[in-house]
Image (cartoon, rainbow, N blue to C red; front, side, top):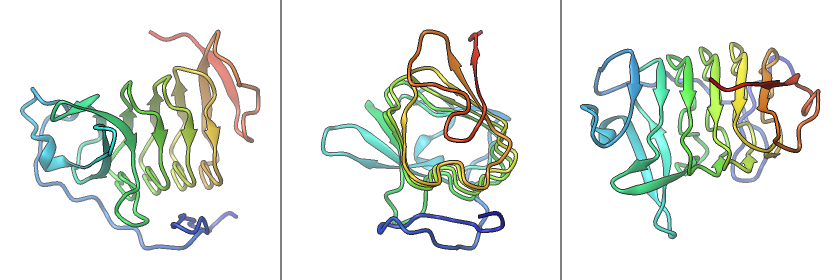
Length: 193
């Protein structure tokens, strides 16, 4: 499937789409830690959707920062998913300025197309609570080299790392469900700092 730019719609079938850059409305320091007490107003860089269970899903990032630490709470509500709730567009889809993302504890799912086409993305840290990586979550991220998992191997839907050829999965000793290779990608133990 080299050369294809899959993205998964509601029907679960891949589609081609045009990339568009993420445009920010607020500039801050190079390393962004997005939380309620920060000078960054989460409402300006993160769009959220409130869930029935009282948690929130990040539905869109519109900032321009390179290194992102997603907050564990926004407006006093736990962030439970990195989403795809605006049709078929993932929360960080097409954000070509992002190089590193740390996903907070509390997140259990990374939804369809969440980081699709983040062509500068190099590293991602995924908390132990994530149990599912949905369709095309990290598709077309050619510079993604390392995904650090803090917990057991999550379930994978289809095409999760499609057109993301050089990524290695790193997992902590004592976690389960890992094998090398893991869904066709190298996997090895790492010791967290």
